[in-house]
Length: 319
Ligand SMILES: Cc1cc2nc3c(=O)[nH]c(=O)nc-3n(C[C@H](O)[C@H](O)[C@H](O)COP(=O)(O)O)c2cc1C
Image (cartoon, rainbow, N blue to C red; front, side, top):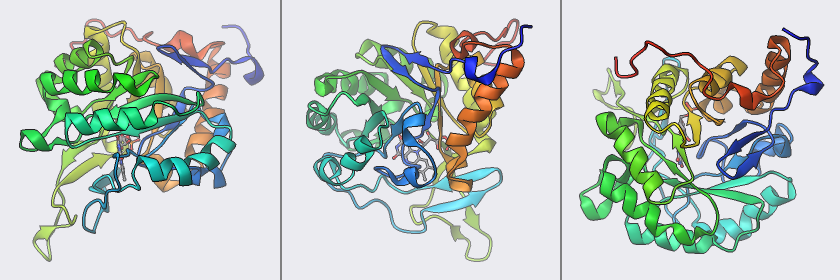
């Protein structure tokens, strides 16, 4: 193994047609709508800042309590509270653009039509908004609250309806799709996604033994953090095995350089960090330095060479 200095390591990575300067970015919903995380580090050093999912109109979100710490992670039901895309553009985006960060804007809708409206509202954003993450892991109100990402047809329809976004689209999948995950991933790519974000939170429930009531105001919620990391790694590996050419952005419990490398080895081109930023908002920035040092120490000159390099034979990802 040749000795490599950290300064010689190339951390840049391609997610489809989008070149990121580093493979580590924020996960939607975990660092605000704008430049909030900039108080803790240089946002321009990140692969990108992914903003909280936005509806075309303002949305109040769910009743409190919205977050609760769980073993090795957290459970949340924030309910996608947000200012709406127009207000976000005028109030939050300018500071984010001034920070020099590349931005991924996440959109959601309650119907296919709302996704189409959202896509149209982001179509003329500057090129610094490098991609649109289409969060399909939320309920389709026209179909009795079934998650879009749990239906092949709804996934295909949403991705087709967001084509007017005028930039690469990443479909954010639900890890609760079970045996449908690969079919949904395929439908997303067929509908025009350029990449897949794998994945959102896992369905969970936390009940207070004293009140005998759910701890979260909404009842159930989504589990995130280190507790879900191996589950997310498996989901990435499963999709990669079935769709080897689909670019993947991984999310699920990443908090160390080793987690980033693990996700890359099973096929992720980049990694989003969410819950770890709640524990320490400097985490993303530290992970970039740590991943650089890890690569140098291991003689890896180009991070991109790690992508899909795990030898998983003869492991069956369904096991
Ligand atoms: C408090 C909270 C809010 C979230 N809000 C969103 C959101 O608005 N849109 C979205 O696509 N994912 C949202 N997520 C999911 C994260 O982006 C990420 O997919 C998930 O938490 C797994 O990554 P992690 O374990 O690193 O947090 C949220 C997660 C948390 C913990």
